[in-house]
Amino acid sequence: GEDVEQSLFLSVREGDSSVINCTYTDSSSTYLYWYKQEPGAGLQLLTYIFSNMDMKQDQRLTVLLNKKDKHLSLRIADTQTGDSAIYFCAESMEGNEKLTFGTGTRLTIIP
Amino acid sequence: EAQVTQNPRYLITVTGKKLTVTCSQNMNHEYMSWYRQDPGLGLRQIYYSMNVEVTDKGDVPEGYKVSRKEKRNFPLILESPSPNQTSLYFCASKGLAGQRSEQFFGPGTRLTVL
Image (cartoon, rainbow over the protein chains, first blue to last red):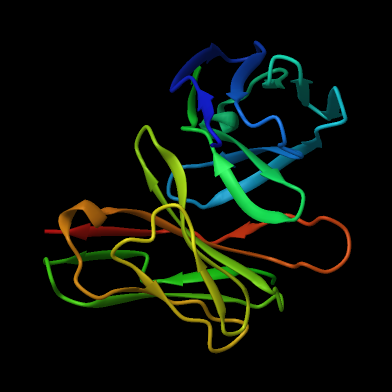
């Protein structure tokens, strides 16, 4: 079955880069997502990547996908206090709207 | 403004007292879904609906019911809540036509069952 794993916590100094990692088990995953959850709020889609891509960049965000190792990462450049949140990776398959989420990584910014 | 709304946002109740959490979207989306979020477990799907009068179980449906009588609404019903249903609940919706689109999430409902 599907399983998505993440580290629970990450602390980064303000201005440094944050790298949040995710591993998944289902090789038939077609789409991989990164969601951000700020305190008291719902989930906001940050970015997503198709499984036939290796990398996607969007301003401060870089997503890297290693399909062979089933490893996904989100790099946030120049991390700011507003980046403090829980970050979830998720996967879905073509023709199936269900999202399978990881456990979430709580990112804490150290001033 | 395109959005998914949930009510109530916070609810404290007692074991066995039936409750309904409402979810409404104004984007004419076909697909709607309920998730629960628990520490260390991420979000798990409870039920989903592909369109009006079409609902199906997700990964953790036990103890929950849903209905989809209208396209915009997808209420989550707990007939006899128990403490293990204390959780943070999210409703989501998504359009199914055209190119792949994102799921929009509501703000969440924090439920405590005593």
